[in-house]
Amino acid sequence: MTNNKRRKLYVNIGIIVLILAIVAGAWTYLASSTTKAKTDGWDKIKQQKRLTIGLDDTFIPMGFRNKQGKLVGFDVDLADATFKKLGIKVKWEPINWATKEQLLNNGQIDAIWNGYTISPARKKKVAFSIPYNHGTQVLVTLSKYNMKSFADMKGRTLGLQNASTADTQFSQYGNLLKKYVKGKPSKYDTFDKAFMDLKAGRIQGILVDSMYAGYYIDHLPDSQNYQIITGGYPTDETGVGFRKSDVQLRERVNDVLKQFQQNGKMRTLQLKWFGRADKGLK
Image (cartoon, rainbow, N blue to C red; front, side, top):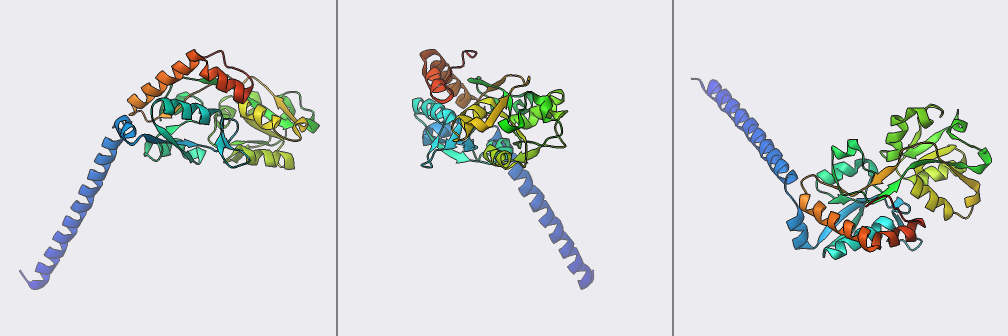
């Protein structure tokens, strides 16, 4: 064998070894990721006495910043009380709502607790707690438009939050509002930006959760300029989203939520933030 042929042989062998090393590394990474995804994280959370919850921190009244910049809201109070009972401290992590399930399942957050509507599509990605609250989707518009029903949105532009329940139900129930509005809705990463565009006239309506709409408008200085219209969207159940592998964490949260529903804690928080108690959930 000539020196040139020998050198080529060594080069080819080196390339093959390198490729095999890369493949082996990738396989090891995937295997470890799969194992991690299937591991129940409760023991680690209990040992560290903390977990991270993802939220949209503009979602009034579930989780939002008050005038002092402090994170407050119904879900903030409920989650803090739940994990205090479990001896766990909550770290709240503002997230892009469109990537919530991805952040949960890759371990960047440990739960989604933020007016998170239970749906068949979401159940494929996460495991939900028992439902603890009810809501529905409503149309918010300006009083000056004098709208009486969804039909009055004909030819007008709608806004909604990207990857929200409003986004899903707008398409799913096309016979309610979708058939009237002009073109595709404008999508926002947070609802407060949609309200800014509504006030500026860039859109003429917002499809949004009834709890958000009621609380947000009630706390505006010009609340009389806004109107809420209902139109047949189904009642939603709200739950906490967990990784499917976190069975123990979910069970412990469910136990506390049931206690709060029985001892009046849930009712107290609902009255504080919504001005009403949800009697439809046990």
